[in-house]
Image (cartoon, rainbow, N blue to C red):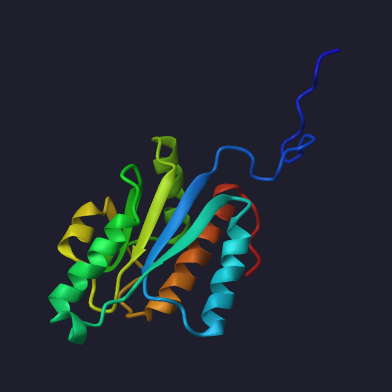
Amino acid sequence: MAEHPRPPGIMGEGEARGSEARVKFTIVAVGKLKERFWTDACAEYLKRLQPYAKTAVREVADVDPGRAGGVATAREREGTAILSAIAPSAYVVLLAIDGKQRSSESLSRRIDALALDGASDFVFVIGGSDGVSDAVRARADETLSFGPLTLPHNLARVVLLEQLYRAQKISRGEPYHK
């Protein structure tokens, strides 16, 4: 007896939602979230992203410039930690105020286009309060900006996770509840 293909969205026994080829998002962020409302917001979007993309956050320690011997030394130490958290094959997007501004739809199309070209491991870098080292900037494949506003790094992390979730919903033509 011939097996009939299942309609889209219907999973076979033992299949999990999102079992199709998925991208991997890693957010590498300098500093830890301290307040519960930030951790709760990030946890909510990490949960929402899981059916679409394997997503993780890697926090690297922020370095106190006063104890490190200056801003440049602190930035270099943070940069070394950031680079050690990035796989050699990853496509790296650095969040920077001078980066390319994209709409949600444009971000979705960009991720889709990169995935079609073979990228599957995306790393988004959120630097420390004094920016990132030249080595981190050089490692970035592109930069992304949320506009000319200065955002606290904690808020930038939440916005990034929300936009990655929104991009996945747009990519699949699914409604996004506003």
